[in-house]
Length: 332
Image (cartoon, rainbow, N blue to C red):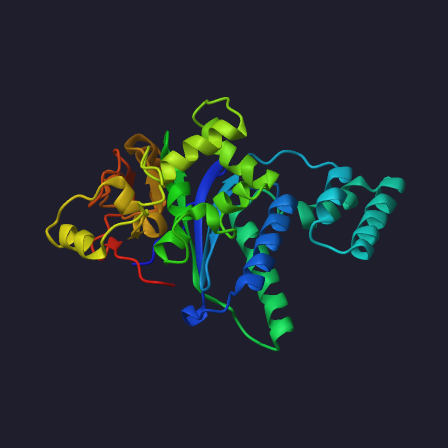
């Protein structure tokens, strides 16, 4: 059964995931870099914040913060537009807006302005703009036509103390699961790798994780704590010990219905993170379930469903997934 995506009206965090049609391996290093730069530009235009991301050859993940929608001044709009439009287009928009203001036609000016501001501070508009612009560019550069993306994008509403850290680590470990790198810091197409490489905007995204925990720390301390999260609270990478696990050993645990340590579970593909609809503490999921009650069956009396097969520290989702909840990763 297809479940509608949940969108909050105010500030919220979402895990977004989308795949290329037929899961084709179309994104080489240069395409990943183009997509990364475009994603940052769309975020700067929209006012949303990319907390972290992972770009692979046939799909991408993003942990996105959509803040409350504040008023946008005329001057701020023009600055934002420069992230997505060329100088000639921006100048034309600015002149049109100013003409309305000079003539005292403020209602017309506001309506003209709303054509752009309606695309800000919104999950759907962020994804739509990113995917459409990348498709148009990719098709133009490769002499291609038609859709580039497989089905709808997936999004999961994320909340509850500490949940963002877990989801961020899952996203930044994508390249480890795919067998591309052993250390996520070596993969420049994820938020952690970008931050390790010196990107200020990527570092601000990861710092946001600790701001949500009321931690006032600098980047050096945030980097240390986040690396511990990536390697499971202290399982640091050493020269003679690679991160990861034996796929056979993990499969044996899953076949026996056992529970994986958090570190091993995060290095598997976990459907809860892409198909859970709402993910977080029990109280967060229950509260979100009540706010969005109309999205669920009338027979449902509670929202929270405990996550299985891993030491998830009490995390719950809104869907009780039954098939292939945790899968041993294959190179992607």
